[in-house]
Image 1 (cartoon, one colour):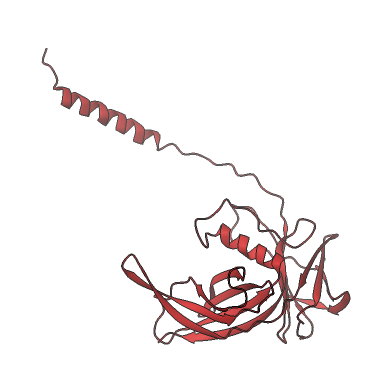
Image 2 (image 1 turned 180 degrees about the vertical axis):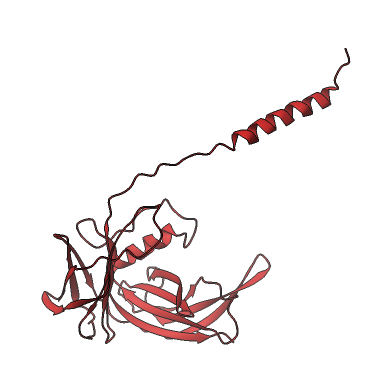
Length: 268
């Protein structure tokens, strides 16, 4: 009997194994995801701007449902400032509630929000910090692996001897592109140049970048910091988990009493 060359025989065996392996990969796995009980989500706050303040209330939905704002109607909202009722709310769209009058929030005041829906009340508190002004927006370019990347820089003076937390909301063409937070643990009392790591290279000459700069309390900072970690800000994403809400009774979301300062920069 004619012998098969050993190398040729080995190649044939490997080929059969490879075909078998790839065939096994074609098996369809049907994932059966458990349906979770919907949870209330409350998001909004009070600023130091003279405006109608907005609270959004919705419910979570199952993984297989379309991504949407699942707003809930007929909720009751009570807002107090240092223990006294501050304002009434009216529902303008399903799940969107705003104050019936415009007013400015005040630094140092504790705001308490109580939301009642389907016989259950959810409460949260937030103390509005002292206001810090966003002085200017500048641009900075870094070289990464031989290529240049441009970013916006928030410039401000951090007050000395006070623990401060900040939030940066960057918008281009009216769309929020970056939402990040920082604290002054390493730059207390210094002039700060904080880089917002959103690449500007896709923007054209004449396009504008708008940054809202908020001073937020510690619990609100923890919420947005955790949210950023889940999405991979500052490194690889961590295991998904709900951010630590400041609401009671198992509600998700955050109530944020904050100051607000804004600047706009134009791409040249």
